[in-house]
Image 1 (cartoon, rainbow, N blue to C red):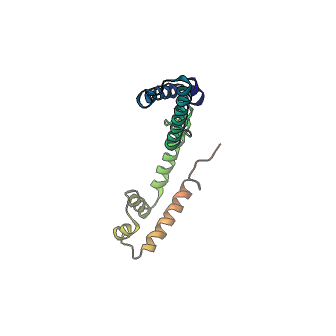
Image 2 (image 1 turned 45 degrees about the vertical axis):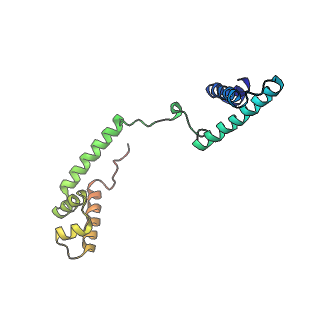
Image 3 (image 1 turned 60 degrees about the vertical axis):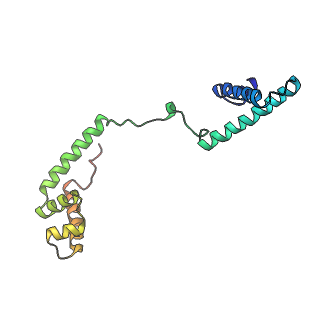
Length: 155
């Protein structure tokens, strides 16, 4: 038990010592002299320790991090982030309201997940490049209406 405890953790050492004793009892019951039994038990223990180490390395247990050491992010938004998000939503709502009808329709279709080809058909554009141009101009105009930046000014 002491040899196993020096080369492994506490719980594993007890299990390892029991496995060695069981193996000695089952396979080596014919060995009864202490001079032969001690070196044999140490050799079996050494083989079992090496097997345990190989197994834990295969499982990635050497590189595991304790659950208590992992820093998890706080999934609840802090009050400052909630206020910023609310302000951004108000700015965006106000800016979208000031957009022209075509831009609002284009944004609505994009938010519904429509492809540019589908938007072209729905809006009756001659070319898909026309829809790309509309999209670019609408986003640029929306950005201008929001003050030239998607993020609010830092104070």
